[in-house]
Image (cartoon, rainbow, N blue to C red; front, top):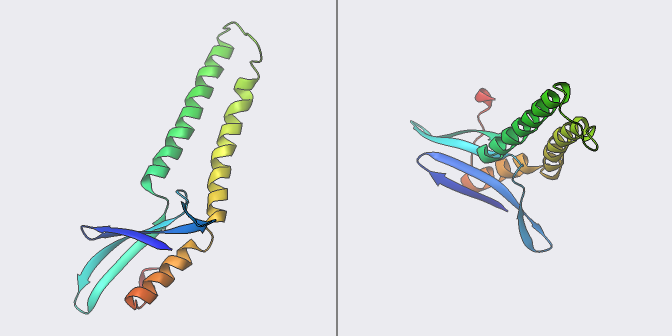
Length: 136
């Protein structure tokens, strides 16, 4: 099922899949962000498929937090602060968190396979869209 939102000349479309009859949204899946412009022979819809900005901001915050933790840990380690317990976790956890973030994005993209084709098909069927390949 394709859902969307339109406001002020901007269109956003995304896919909602049914999982055991319950609607499920993959927030990491690409959605279509497009603009609508009137032209002499109709309306031009021009857009790009990408992750929502909120998800991009979350990933940036996640990776920045991991980098800040690691920088603080490395400083403390080499400054000679007392070492209590398993200090090696400070070296192990950041790469694990980074791999988790990239793995989450890869898994989400795999789960969202076919999303772009589904949205384009929806637009063609609903609006009788003529594809213009000039813009890529």
